Structures are given as structure tokens and as C-alpha cells.
Length: 200
Image (tube, rainbow, N blue to C red):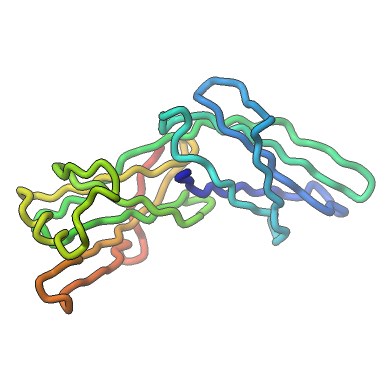
């Protein structure tokens, strides 16, 4: 299953906390959680306890769904749970416009601004008939196949996160299958370290 990482943090309310776990499950938008299929992860103690939840990119075929989670807290003498938090997970499209046809493929690296986790989406180029990566031409033929498509070449990908958050992203630009293999190239464009942003 294709997943993306979403960071969750916890601040201990006082001393003596031995362990904090996040329990989480996704459901179709607006549907109640089925805790029998929940995942759990231990939050690593640092100045702030933190863990990365691995969430699906689709639930029942939809890129928008609900995330339900709560924290299980083990203290020196007691165990408690937080309330259940429910958040809307949203997807938004981002685009790279290759006006000159310089690249054979484009990837998007992205994360939430306020709680970064590196995620990656492979872009799909408008006009290409690939149903899945396995149906693409062999790497040696990619350059000629892409070059034959009319300009501009537009690559699209999705990013995910909690509704209302901001996602920062950059581009992974690849040129493969060139007639001269020495001309194959890849580079990262992160807008001089600033990236680009989109609100969910």
C-alpha cells in the first residue's frame, strides 16, 4: 500500500511520563473509526515526544478521508488516554511545467511546514498513456517517447496533509535515456532552500 508520513507531537504535562503511544486509524470522510484495525506507534522522547504516522494515500479509493487518533500515556503510577482527535486529510495537486521538454520525469518531494516529514510523489505527465509504472517503456526508450509528445510537458502529482495546514514542496528533475548516456542527469530544485508552498 502506498503511504505518506504525517508527524504527531506530544508534550508531557508533567514529570514521570514513562511512555506515550499514538493509536490511529483512517476511515472514509465522516465515517466512525474502526479501532479493530488501528495502528500504533511509540513517540520518541526528545524535548517534545514525536512519531511519524504512516497513512494510506487513499481510503476506499478516495484521496480525502478522516484520520482518528488518540494518545495512550503511561505514568509512574497510572495510565490514561487522551480524547480522540479526528482530522480531515486532504490531497491537492501540484504541477511542474516543463516548457522546453528538458526532463523525462519529475518527482515532487514534500512535507508539512509545521511538522516536516519527507514524502515523495512521482509525477505523471499529461498525455502519456501509462496506466502504471510497469507499463512505461524501457528506460532507454523514455527520452524518445517523452520527446515525441507536444510541448509544454506538464507533470502533475498529489500532496497530502491535514486540512488547513501548509505543505512545502520541491522538484526532483530527471533526464534519462539520452542518446549519450553521459548526458543523463538529475537535480533537485527547492527554490534556493525556500521551496514552494500550497495550503490544504
